[in-house]
Amino acid sequence: MKKFAVFGNPIAHSVSPTIHQMFAKNCGETISYEKVLVPLDDFEQALSSFFSDPMAMGCNVTVPFKQQAFELASDNSSAARAAQAVNTLFKDGSGDIHGYNTDGMGLVRDLIAHGTELKDKRILLIGAGGAARGAIMPLIDESPASIAVFNRTRSKAQEMVDTLSHDRLAVIDKHNLNDFAADIVINSTSASLSNTLPDGVSPQLFTHCELAYDMAYGKSRTVFMGYAQQHGARKQLDGLGMLVEQAAAAFTIWTDKSPDTAPVIQFLRDNV
Ligand code: NDP
Image (tube, rainbow, N blue to C red; front, side, top):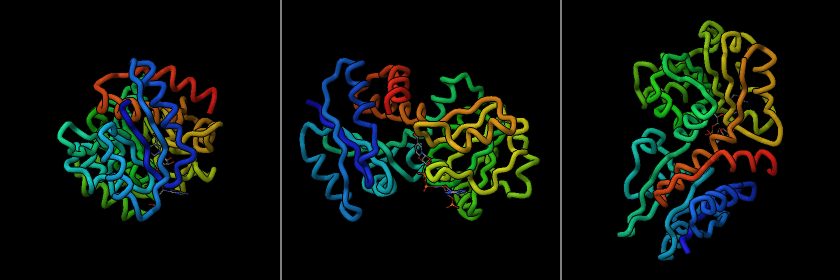
């Protein structure tokens, strides 16, 4: 049986086994997929022990090991190099381990699945952590008019924008935020995980906003989604679809098969 896993710390909350088992059923594959709680200083050893099993084909990697996975892979996809982080590893026939980052692709696929047009749109991306870094190049590939990045710690946004270097990408300061007139506002901060709004968010951000997207997800709508709706955003989405779409992209890397994502998203909405 093909063997897969997700490595992280913490990991108990992960729904990746459920998602991948549903994909496998949908695609006629029989797989095992386990959660591995990795001690903070033991990622390399845990990975090598997993991949020493000939049946181990690939794994997902989550917080806080994505940067380490990037460093350990024999080579990395262009998205992983842009993000400097890997969420998917794949072992090829000769035992080499390849790194990928499917988070940004997951975001874009979810936006498109909800009928969002990205071409020529003004996108405000709030946050400059790993999720933001993974999202930028896949967003740029959709030809938006511009992407402005705002982060609580400005230097981190500047560093990210300088590294990725693109003429449609720039840092925006707090005092210019209200003049940006974003069509799409994406919250890539972890503020929603503590039920707070990202610092710097004000009602004016949503005046022209057709979509407010929060990468976080949970049982109920996030604070950010509620605030965006209250202040004029015409549509609000959470990151559950992104989660399932990034998993589907990983599943395709491992198996060459494209699972149906809609029933999985619906199942998680109803049951998790
Ligand atoms: P990181 O820890 O790498 O980055 C966190 C970011 O959030 C930083 O930019 C940080 O700003 C900012 N931040 C945290 N708290 C606040 C606050 N109160 N106000 C303003 N900014 C704040 O996290 P990730 O990038 O890995 O993850 C970010 C979010 O994206 C999480 O909610 C995570 O669950 C979600 N995510 C969702 C995925 C999906 O598939 N749906 C995939 C990956 C992530 P500063 O630099 O100033 O510290």
